[in-house]
Image (cartoon, rainbow, N blue to C red; front, side, top):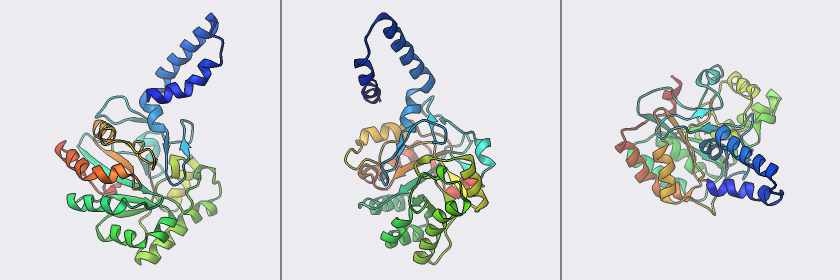
Length: 286
């Protein structure tokens, strides 16, 4: 995190004349940046998906979290109550040690089988939010998810910025095409769970999703696991995923992560040792 901040500010610092006035300005800027934003807020808001390579920065319409204390729920940029009116969720408001595990699937690079193996070993039911092309390219994995008791949710067909879609017809098509592909592969209707690509959303989007019968799911815990050529170490992953787990958490992981596939068995065991029960996502909506 320190590296990220220094990298972002280095050009700024090098290109100004460090007079007394600019020096004061820089100090004020740094202070307001640290206080107003928070290290955890900045880090968790830079949530991207490996299937697009795009990044969601901290701004209106992008899902963001501010971690105040390890083991406690983060502060989100929408409250439980604000989301509830649209059948939308990011965590459960509870003191019980329960959590919900989700994976975003943009493409397959050989890690999903190992992830499913670990989930099966621990008897865990997860939700896989998939894009349409994933269903087309990986029908056997989709079938396995269903057969082993997991839920397959809708991550849209093209993974666009859905907050820029104002037409209900266009919004519906992104979801309906995925539904149709899922039914063709499984013979079943798709569960109407939706995760906005890149965490980008708008009030209009949330309203349209609800109108189409969908429940929208954000998350309360994620970490930078989507860069194929810059995977986190086991220690870095555990630091985030164990330190920041909290009662009622909705955890977002990516199926493309080598680290996730390698550590999931041990990670699930450690969460269990901490007293957490991993519940099916449907229990969050009851």
